[in-house]
Image 1 (cartoon, one colour):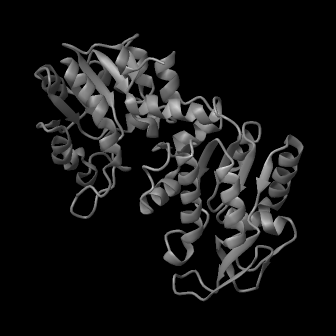
Image 2 (cartoon, one colour):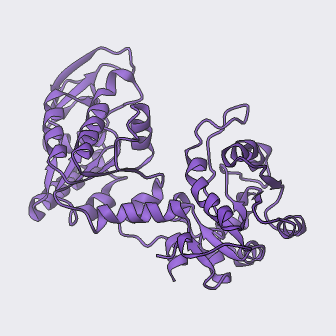
Image 3 (cartoon, one colour):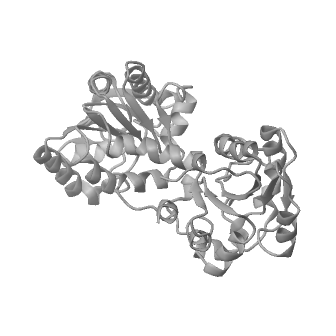
Length: 396
């Protein structure tokens, strides 16, 4: 794996594909700067070497060319503050203004280009567009793991025009290294905790993990599809009725491969989808009509905690319940604490996927697990065994 640590950037211009797709409020203030903070070490390494940095990213999903609300100019001040220098900005990402701004950069300076997705050519993976991007720097650095599963101009196609002058930044390198610890290098027993609403969205990854892990813990809305498939009554709980056979086949596959598939045994139910709803605990297969399961309950917590504490490698993707509502957050918080306790005992734990990351942040546990992946879809595809275009482009 070729990383920036293998290159001296003195006197070089580095074009870094970062992921600055950060949430902004109505006043264009950044509400979560995790992705910006993650890119800082890569930028600083190049500046410390005596190099120059040009940053490119997307922001949001502009549909019809430039829109002010999607402009990267809104993050310039915050980025400048993080780097303790004045970041220059150019209101385009290709063309004469960009070329001039890049040519005028001095060592130790940072230039941020405008939103790549103001051009449809970016998502289309257009070669001519990628070539123009590549022409303004000496070395291409991909540090945007969150878009590594997309074959876009700036994430993959650009590598065709830079020869061997390409490498991973620290974000990309750390993501790959830590995911490998789960996928191919994990110390056993390995446990995957899969939560979320739908079995259908996790089917590929659960199938893939069957040959990698010792235990799979199921939580969230998809638990009720499994419960119903096994003949249970789940009331008004979320169920994918067209996936009942699929759930049964996963149960059979786990048995065949010797994987322990843990499904909740009890459920915290509500008579409405509301934090103010009345609640009652039942076995997961005895939810009354008109009631819906929104979290795991005490018996399941004990079983899951024991499984987690007896694991040496832990992957967590997806919450145990509707953790956004305080009344139904306890199951997810309990599992997060169990993972933190296992980590403190020496286990390796990786948390990934938007909801899981949001959960560990909500419970202030991001520093109590081994690694928090910011990859989202890219992380899932990597775990599924797919070759990510952004990774392949650097490695080839």
